[in-house]
Length: 341
Image 1 (tube, rainbow, N blue to C red):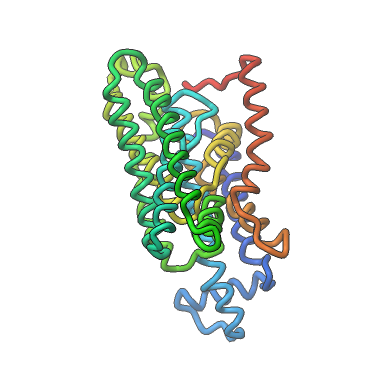
Image 2: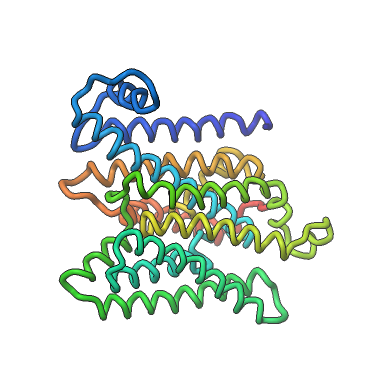
């Protein structure tokens, strides 16, 4: 790793570790760092912690699954955002640009409407995200001529709007006393109901998709170039584009299926990581994953401690992301676009 990238990567790792510590220590039930270490060590095969059962339950059964889920969701959305921004050569692109988030949201809303239960809702959200991107890719491939990336981008926007209309229709038809509040709560994003049983359905696709993106990180630098230049360098642009989109969609759908709609993470965090380590994907993707996990940890801790009731994640990420997005728009108007090469 180049020397210039090492401080930024270490800073991103420090943010993640600080986020983990804060998430374990703070909450309705305060726990000391020593108690957290004793409980975790006991669960990993060490001697019994000797602490009250309530402390062990809070650390192991409540906060540990939530911390792991927050890290996975933050890393997944951030890595997907970095991949999409490079692939579409646009600093304002986020992971839901191809309809993954909207498809997952529609799947979850349908699951709530038909009372499928928590596991069924998560499965419907996951499948909905994958089907939405598959539809975008199929329709985009039917359009001949023109720039392939731009066609895919515009198709994703159109399909996303259509899926949004479907979500609105289901909310209109839902029971206003039971189903509608559940839909609204889920769409705003939250990790409050995360348990150990939710980790495997989340971690398996997130790890698989992130591994694919990390394996392609060197070739993603080439894909940031115009298609003609990338093909001149010998890159199989169509195959690589499908692989990158599929992997990024996989991690996005898994994250949305678990946490609901958590916006802005995939837009904000890649820019912060790019500022720390530069635009090369070999350095950018690991730093983005670390920084994204820490970012969502801090936001989630704030969401469950700042008010008597838990604040939805989507609300807080929007508070952070909106001014950042405005700053990006002003920067782009001044011609200060990042160099994606």
